[in-house]
Amino acid sequence: FFNGVAVSSHSACRMLSPGERQTSDSQVRKIHESGGIIGMMLWDRVINPGRARVDLDHLWLHLVRVQGLVGGWDSVGLG
Image (cartoon, rainbow, N blue to C red; front, side, top):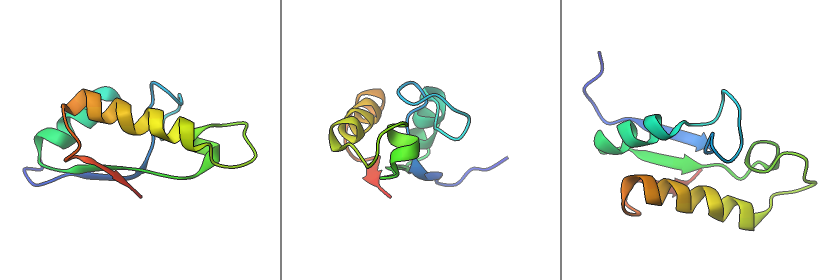
């Protein structure tokens, strides 16, 4: 399989916004273990479905969840 650095861009946490497009906790951990980055998107339909525009408080929940799963901010990004 793949032995390089993995990146998940334009992501959201599946635990906070259920759906196949979102990144699972196990995927977040594996990406981090590879030295990669998980970039959270700013699209309201994925981050916080049902809202008229992006809710930055909800985006923060996604960022903090990834940070908590990997134990730091090195693997957390926007975009």
